[in-house]
Amino acid sequence: MDETHMTIGRMCETFGVSARTLRFYETKKLLFPIRQGQKRLFTKRDRARLKLILKGKRFGFSLEEIRQLLDLYKSDQDPQFQIKQAHERAERQLKALEAKKHELEEIIDDLRSQLAWGKNLLSTRAPLKPAIRHFDQ
Image 1 (cartoon, rainbow, N blue to C red):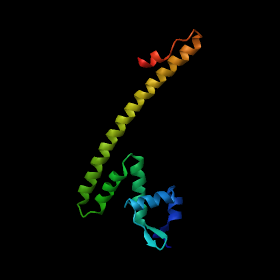
Image 2 (cartoon, rainbow, N blue to C red):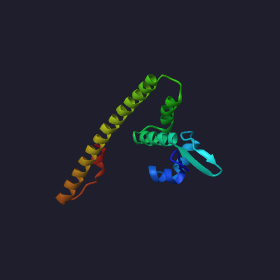
Image 3 (tube, one colour):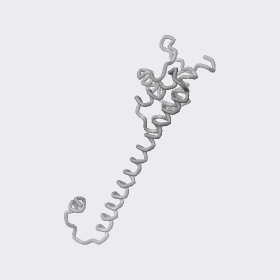
Image 4 (spheres, rainbow, N blue to C red):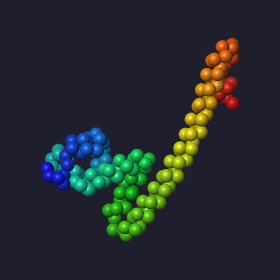
């Protein structure tokens, strides 16, 4: 093995993923290691692709969306077009994540309100009525 190739064990150690994850990405045609019998050797290109896959997953892209983004760069298309397409998809994903964030903030506020209601009710030591009515409001 030289600097241009990395074993599956080294890939796992370097990127903090399991061998199973790397094999899964290989079956999904996201990575293309060189096979030498049972041994897999990952090239610099595979390492770059894995970095992009992990970043794409972190950003909430599906594996299919990640594949489409990666496929943009292996095509013979104009680099300007590739960057524009990736940028547009990233903008859409950012909007979707911001919408989810807003929804989560509303849910958190509602849960805090419910917890405050419950804490207040428990601290009064008054006879408790069925609490389910409050949650119906």
